[in-house]
Structure formats: C-alpha cells, structure tokens
Image (cartoon, rainbow, N blue to C red; front, side, top):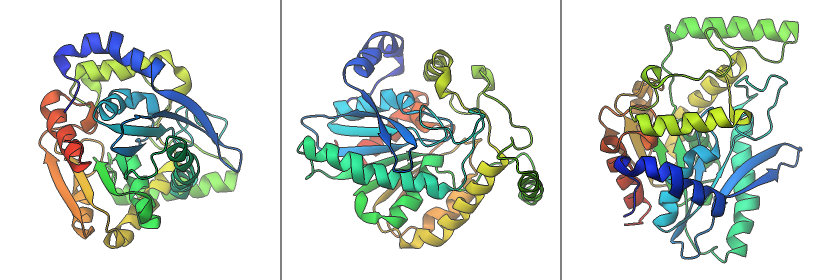
Length: 326
C-alpha cells in the first residue's frame, strides 16, 4: 500500500505532488442546468479497481485533497472531486464571495447527485470503467451532504467513508442561545431583505498561524494547504453566515431521521480530539446506521486525512482496506 509519509513531505510537496497536479489531475468545469458552474478535478487510472468520489468539507477545495487523490490513484483508483457551490472555484451565490452561504443543503445534495449521474457516469463510459464499483469519501460537511445523498440515492455508491462527520457543531455558547440568536438574525435579515450576514464572531478569510489552528497537528500538511489558499485567493472563504448555519442545523436534524434507512456499508472515522464538530452527536447518529463500522482515531484533530502520520496512517489504512485496495 502506497501512502505519503511526513519525513518525505518537504520534497514531496516541492516535486512529486506539483507534477501530479499538473500532469495527471485534470481540471474542468461542469455547468448545472440552472447556470451555476462547479469546478472539478479528476484523474483516471487505466488500471483502476474502483472509482472514488470525494465530498470535501466547508471552505475547502478539490486541490486541497491532491495528496489524498494521488495516494488513491497510486493504489488503484480513478478519482473525482469538485468544489461545492459557494466555495472553492465554483459559483458563489451572493455578491460577497467571502460569505460562507448556502440557501439549503438540498442544493449541495442536488449538485452531488447531478454531477455523479451526468459527468462522472459519462467519464466512466468514455474510460470503459462502468463495471467498477463507485465509492464515496466524505469529510465533515461533506459527510453531512454524503449521508443525505446516500439516503436519497443509495444505488449510486457501493461503499461510503465518513471522516469526522458534521452531525453536530461545537458552539461557543449553549445551543439554545445559538438557536435564539440565529432565529432573531434570520427574521431580521428577511425583514430588511438582506441576503446574508456573518453569524456572531465570524468574518472574512483569515490566514491562521499553525499554533492557533484547530484542524490538524501536522505543521507540514497545514502549511502546504495554507500556502495554496494564500497563492489562490479565488478559493478563499470566510466564516459561516446566519443562513448557512440555519441550513446546516436543519440538515443535521434530518440525518437523524434518514440514518436508519441507509443500508450501504459505512466506515465512520471519528477524530478523538475534534474541536470543530460535536462527537456527542456523532455517537448518537452512528448506531442508527444498520451497516456502519465506527473507528476512533484517538487524539486526532478534525482533519484526520491531513493529520500527523501517527493518526493519518491508521486512518488511511482503514480507508484503503474498506475500499478493498489492499
């Protein structure tokens, strides 16, 4: 099994990964019937054992997953990833491009459903890989989207990995206070006809020092994707808006009701040291899935797939084994 390792990352990020991005990781744009444009990255392995579709988290972009995509490719996968509406290089829905905004998570779910049924299916046909299984790899908000998508269209995917799924959010105040502030803000914005506004404490994109980040304990991996966002300001995104948070809470509430209907094989990776999502909510939802395996990565921070090797290696090994690549 091929996996990148921290002792080689400096050279890897300077040479091997940029070459892979330039020569293998094809970029493109898929246009939604309503005119929105979704930026994607793809790589077709002529000897693929399976396809993997990646649903990233909030404020991320497809290229941030280049290291993971390269690993999947080297282990026998064709891979497709795209930027969600409102982030990355995909269409932003409102004038202030920094606003983390969405009207409803149904938009995210519909986008993923449409692009898989249209573009990914066509890509499989042209590469003569329609016989291969299609797996889904999700992180955080992508896991919220992926869970709702699999509940809606279970036939699209054979196996599903959910990394640090966003089934609950760690808030700086009790949730009843958050919901009260949210309700007041939403109604005020509707009355004033304001399309969006940052939730309390949120703001435009900020370049956060490693020592202050809550995502990963790996300085090398953190500095790599931070540098990419600095060099590509068009993919930067600010904090969440009242509207995004309202949509997210509704989506997470819906997951509780649809979870028992999802019979696809699921692998859930739980970040033991998560400071972003609420693991208590995860622990309540996962037992509702009829066919889920929960693996706790002790002490790992939220972005398990960008963590130090001591956390990332076992997590990636579980993913590769689950996708039957070992």
